[in-house]
Image (cartoon, rainbow, N blue to C red; front, side, top):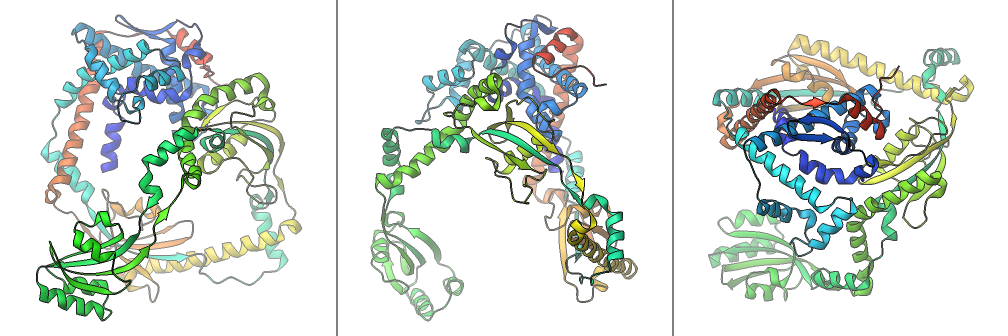
Amino acid sequence: MISYLRRVFVESWLGRVSAIIIFLAFIGWGVGDVLGYMGTETDVVAKVGQNRISSADLGQALQAEMPAITKQMGVSDPSQVPPAMRRQVAHQILQRLIGQAELMEAARRLNVAVPDSAVRDEVFAQPYFKGTNGQFDRNIFNARLREHNLNEQRFLNMIRDDLTTRTILQPVAQAASASTTMATRLSAFGLQTHVVDMLRIPFADQPTPSTPDDATLQRFYANHPWLFRSPELRHARVVVLSPSTVADTITVDDKDLKRVYEEQITRYHVPETRDVQVVTLSDEKQAQAVADLWSKGTDWNSVLLAAKGGASVDMPGARPSTIPSETLSKAIFAAPLSQVQGPLKTEAGWVVFRVNKVIAPQDTPFEKARQDILGQFRKAQAPAVVSARSRQLQDAIAGGGLDAIPSDIGAAAAAGTLDAQGNTAEKEPAPLPASGKLRDAIVQKIFSLPKGNQPNLIEGPDNSWYAVQVDTITPDSPRTFEQAKADVLAAWQAEARKHAADEHATTLYTAARERGGIVTVAGGAPIQKNLSFSRAAPNASIPSELMAYLPQMKAGQSIMGEDSSGFLVATVTKVFTPDPKADPVAFQRVKDALGQSEGDDLVASYVDALAKHTPPKIDERAVSATLSSLGFDGTVEQ
């Protein structure tokens, strides 16, 4: 339920229209100089009253939003989106820009004006322009704008437009109010709780059948030809520019490193610290009793019970400065290891303590700390360096392909043969200069391109860029029975174990339905009992394969399912709905979310009314020209 409400708000007009200017101003910076791609293009794609949406505006919005859209569609870059779909996306983005223009036109008619002081305050508040002292830094501001080819006046106009939009939209959205009845119903829906008993029948736990004769294996081989093929292999060249590849090329002056060393002196000059457990009591006799008990080897939990009414604390890595009592501090740092001390009279009462560990002081000179500090610097600066050098890499690829990569920009190159899982022909991970999501994106890209493709620089995950060129493609091919015999046997045995698990689970499921639950028929099999969940609080222990059905089931009903490792049999033992108002804070959150959702509806209606008052005029030729100039050809595929 909470996810549903969040989705309603995040994907609303209020969330998109009111944030569009800042979205383009900041998020859009990561995609390069759109104005540079547009050249001297001055065409207008749409008019709303006295407002104009230029080709450059639409192009910038497309460049900013297409990476997220392509990710949602499960592809790695916009070129893989069908042209007809790209055109539809472009029109959706254009409609949002039109909505923004409608609001600006309404502001003009209403004489809404944002003063320069408000624009200045908004800019000064942005963390992107603050220095190490936390204050606005003019040099950083200028560098940010210069890095992304934005002049100051254009940027300030963006900020002013955003403030104008908020001035109009916020009162409209805030006029909404949520119904208590609706909030109660939605809360009850989300809080409805199911309690489940679940049994798993793993494939791997089934006995391995004996080896069958060759005739059986050959029949299995003939019936499952897709399992016994050599995979498609591709030889590709790859260039990667990422924070990890550029880190070693970033140089930092020793003066800056020493400044950081001095600022973090407590990190590199650590005095002796001690792990200590302390009990403070107001009564000396009780403190003595605790000390006597503790000295006999009683564990900490028992000490806590004996010290009921007092204050107890476990302090790992304590320094003299972190102990509030000077008397206690001196006693702790003079005490022997692992011996109970006290009772000791302090300002807070009678103290009993034990030192469990002594960590010797550590003094790290600058020469030893230098590499650690340099690593910190490089990690912090790498994303900005990648952004700046991606332009050089793009120019180099455009001018000479992957053979013309400059050696001084920190780009890493690799070439080799791999399959669609990123492994070599020897089933070892291919040595790509990337890991995680970036590696996955590169492998997917390699297997989506034709042989001899023209390499293009592509934005990857985690502030990375890469280019790929496929040299050769070796199609997948069938293996003979003799070549695949070992794999055929393993697959046949796995299938037999799965079939045995299926039969066992089916028997239990049938019996559970007839006898009132899995508990009554499981025998000695281990059961997970009393697993509870609600729509607002899912249970990670319950596989998603069952969660598509369990919320609709009644108490006493059983279900059978399958996941990647085995079969599942589950019985719903109880269904109940807690009072939504028992937790007033959570109930108010739901009510507030409902109010926001209704506010979104008001905003959407308001923008729709503005469009009817001032209908937009769209130039389809200019839209198509903009798509073509960015490589998003708007023609429909045949």
